[in-house]
Image 1 (cartoon, rainbow, N blue to C red):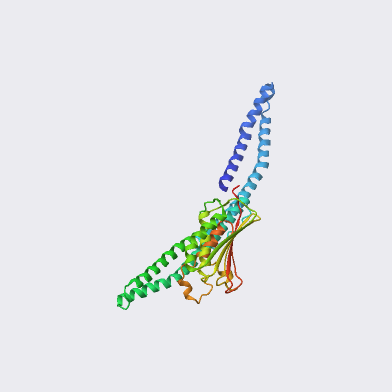
Image 2 (cartoon, rainbow, N blue to C red):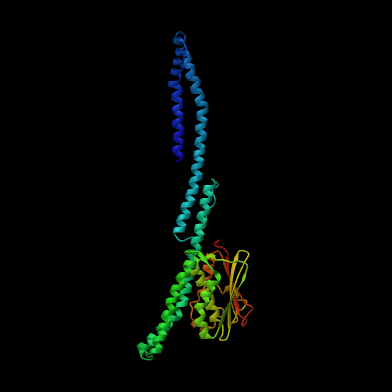
Length: 361
């Protein structure tokens, strides 16, 4: 590109010089004739030579330095742009090879190049985050699959060796472990999509109280079977529907209610409180169950985190260990936050869902 620019400048200079040397004198002579000085023009050949000399001198005086300066600028731009393009090319190859920590410096060539560098660095950082998520996900998945696979393997080997009967109890155990693996696979895929920001939301005007009522109705049979009471309440000046994805937020509420029910003893109580104030929608699911120790509280929303890792019976409860992590990712996709709180072990816990109150009008 720079060589083409220099070639255009050189061609322009040559054209101007040829015009001044060949066409200019002839036009000057013609103008003399048209002005009625034909007799004088015949003896003024030396004026043509002088005109040609003056024109060429002027072109050389102005054109050659201009061409030289243009050449220097072209060379400078060629080196600068070439260096930047080589940096982008090298960085792109690093990213293609899986090295996402590469950063492209800003070039100082203008806003467009700087925006491109920032966009490239953001892309590399996002790819690094996705790669980290996938690696951690694979490690967590391998860890979580170990228990059901070991159970399946042990029972199948026992059946093969004749030490375990293939009766209804054994079949129920095998079916439960297979169902656990199926749910784990489904949840791990959903969490991956949510954490990578690929979840597609379909907002629509929804009454928050109605959404809470649906979620509570869904958990009611399990709560009744466990003798746990589920109640609701609502306060706040805000009225009318809110723009959100009812399926996704309904899923979040279901996860929070299932989690509360799982950690609440028979005879316990789960309460859902809805509040609307200061352009925010708050839904809090609280229980009077097991509670969470302070050292575990910052981590309960992480995938596969167990507040009591040594209690393996907790793994046997229905759930893949991903419900809270999925809920957190879905809430953040709405531009909101999900927070956990607990006074301590044995004093219950609460999970607060906070969303921007985008009223439908």
